[in-house]
Length: 104
Image (cartoon, rainbow, N blue to C red):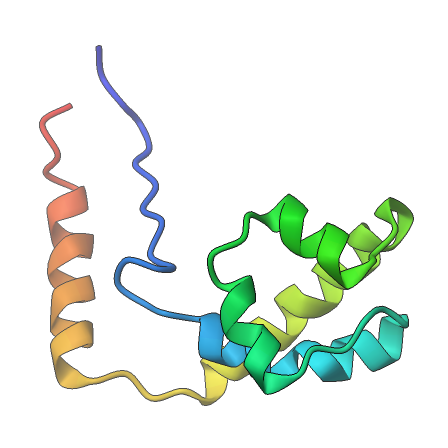
């Protein structure tokens, strides 16, 4: 079987975005009116699944699309401001070149 697409989940493997998440969480909580998180509570959230986190924060299901869209926008803005290390650029560049030569 040949694969036409390979998807890598970088978050938590090559990139730890949890510190960014904690940094913006209370701003988003104020905007969408769900529970704020104290710094000592934030680390406890790290081990929770998305459903557990949503339940803990008291977010109703109908707000999820709005919050998700807002968080994606903020993450994209944050990524545009971040500078990449030479090693990560070299690594991603070599992956990009290798992607065209995948045997499957």
